[in-house]
Image (cartoon, rainbow, N blue to C red):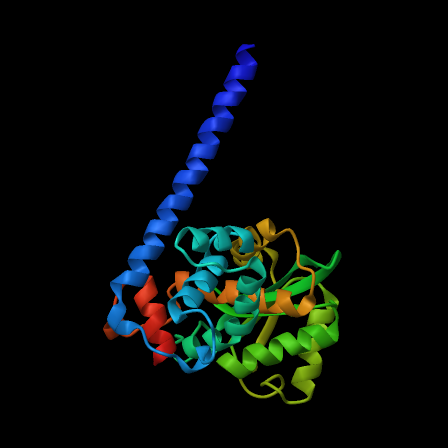
Length: 274
């Protein structure tokens, strides 16, 4: 009997804690939207949309940053008097993540010249897919790439993306997977980076140096885990890119102008309007 009552009390307090958390987030949402009436303007990327810009920005930003489902975000919006379907929030995330990346990319700070590269796993449509990721020795995110396969072609696509954005590093630290090494050798022989001339890019394997990237995988997987997998690979690639963007913001990898303010909502709004 005591165990039954204790379990009931625990369930009651858990429900109260969840309700209090939802109410707090709703209150913050109201304060954010109401605090910047002068900043409300029609961004080009939101043209011909039914919902207000601030609603879309806040829902997408919160979904990528916090462990909230589409249904929970829709319920929070409903408490604010905004009727939106969970599938609509999904479409916002898939539609606007690339636009958000473009807006933030102009303010990105340079990364270090020592890259640590590794792969991790995600589940899409019941199948495992591979997320290539890289950070520098300070833990700053260099690049990420979601692929259906773990082979030379996927590794080449990842490295081309990283090199195009950040240029050549001084050293690249890999794990022992041969396909990743083969991809760099092939790219080097094709003169896609300095592989054979004076001061070439050093390619090495050192397990303990890659601990930093293995630990950094938790930033993405801790957010993606509660999503319980993706149904479509296209959506998974967009959502993961958005999660990586938010984590780069958390790490302070962007040089945000002081004129954009200090509040996250205001910074995002001004960033998209810049």
